[in-house]
Amino acid sequence: MPLTDFASLLPTLAWAFGENAVWQPDGTGYQVTIPGRFRIDPHEVAMPGPAVEALNVTQTWFYCDQRQVPSFPDRVPGLHDLLSIRGQWWEIVQIDADDLGELGYRLLKAGERLPASKLVRDGSLA
Image 1 (cartoon, helix red, strand yellow):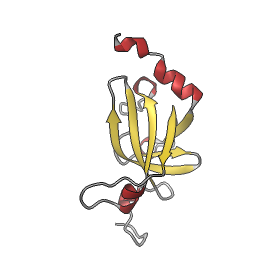
Image 2: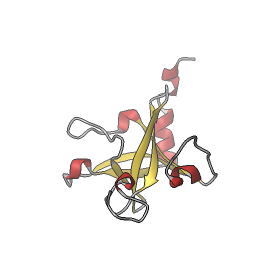
Image 3: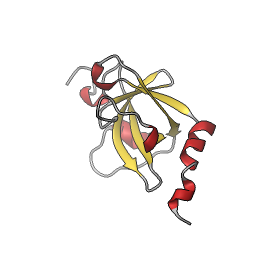
Image 4: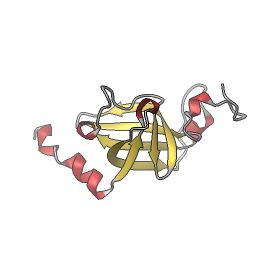
């Protein structure tokens, strides 16, 4: 069975379990809506080496069909970009892709329009 047989799987998942993410590229004020699936895994996941505490506690992911991610003007969301989902800002800290064309954005809760990677533990700017 070729992978093309699964071409309708990702759009169907986004429709059935869908949650939109909003990306504002480069502070332009322009909003790009990305259909996908939002998932928070409450189980602890051990990560090797020194890691931000939040990455050791939960895994939060936004999955979307690579073909449904609009580019603006010539790029798609990447590491340390922010997505707004369910009224909260999330920073993209890891990107995965599979052979079906699904992108997985691993997320870390961000401050008010500020990537978590720019914060120090006490909340001041780095």
